[in-house]
Each structure stands twice: as C-alpha cells, then as structure tokens.
Image 1 (cartoon, rainbow, N blue to C red):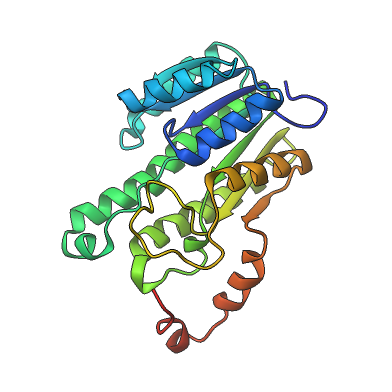
Image 2: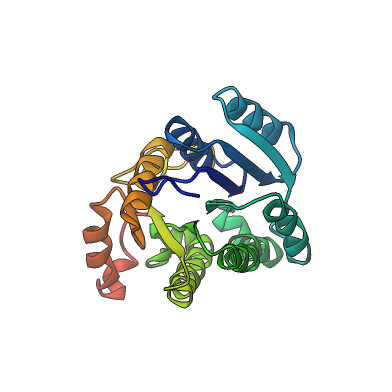
Length: 251
C-alpha cells in the first residue's frame, strides 16, 4: 500500500532500462519504495539497472517483457501481480526512431507506432485491470510534449505519443472512482541517451527533474504533469498557432 504521503511501497517499471524510470525508482527508493520490478528485454543493461537499485536497499526483480509482443503481456504481468499488490506501474518504454529513415522505410515507422502506442495500449490495459482488481494503485504514463502537436521533424514519434496521451487520458476517466489513479507525464526535451546527438530544444530537462515532478504529482494525485511546468503555457500557444506558421518553426 502507499504511505501517508501517497508514495508507493512497490513499483513495476515497464521499460526497465529507461533513464527516466530509473531516476524515478532511485528517488522513490530513497523515500519509501522497497520492492521494484523491472520489466524489459533481458539484457546486461537490465541486469545492471537491477544491481544498481539493489545497492540502494530495494528488493529488485527483473521480468522479461517485450512491448512488441502484446500476446504475452497478460501472462508476463499477471505473474508479477500474482506475487503481491503493486502500488505503482510506470509505463516508460518508447523508441524515438529516425524520422528521415522511417519516412523512407514504412516498416520502421510501423515499429515506432507499435512500440510507443500499440504495445503501450496493451500493457496499460493489462496493468490497469490488475490495479483495479486489487482496488488501489497508480498508473503513471510517460507521454511527451511531442504528442501535443506533431512537428515536421518528428511527426512519426509525435503521432505515436499523441495517440498514447489521448488513450491514457481516456483510461484515467474510465478508472475514475475505482481507486486507481492514472497520471500522464509530458516532459519536454530530456537530456538522455535517447536524445544524444540531437539539437537541444528550449526548456530542456533531465531524467532527475522528471523523477522529481513524478514524485510531486503522486503526492498531489495529479492527472497531468508537465516537465518543466512552463511547457504548459508554451504548448498552449503552439497548439493554436496557424499551421502555416507552425510548419516554419525551427526543428
């Protein structure tokens, strides 16, 4: 169960090597979280992430999980929930893709969409049903400001996040009053391995800053969290910018 401040004692991360997810796990372990499940493809990176969190004092388990295999999600996640209640599920997996390459290779674009949207829809629904069955818990979904309005420079990734964001909001409405809390997190440009080599956007942030915002959102039981907060106003303006103006904005 969550503590008096709304922070989880147990955490399931979908996308167990995500830098944002691991920063969040470290922060929560420093507060109250004692059990962590890292779900991801079996790799040395996943094992290393588990070892790092164990060194912080948490009981950490790894579980094989593939966003591109929706048929396995119910079985894989069911085994985790069968071990005991999960207070928080953090959906943190995504791939950025290569816009120029993916425009030329539709199969590559489909992989971005299937990972970021289809895989997320499947695993989120499975997790949400399990949380609802136990009667409590939070589902935290990492979206992106890229989904607010897709730009020419990354519209394949942006459109996948737009779909995820709309889905997560609808899921939150569907679960309202059930004891399950859904929180959508919309970071801006995050300095991470995934964005290494890309031109940094204004109001860039870090995995640690996103983790801090997630903790605060959990305490407040927020439904939407922007990181940094100033992006809410920026995106409100960009959302209503004329299309002819928007397409001329710097990439």
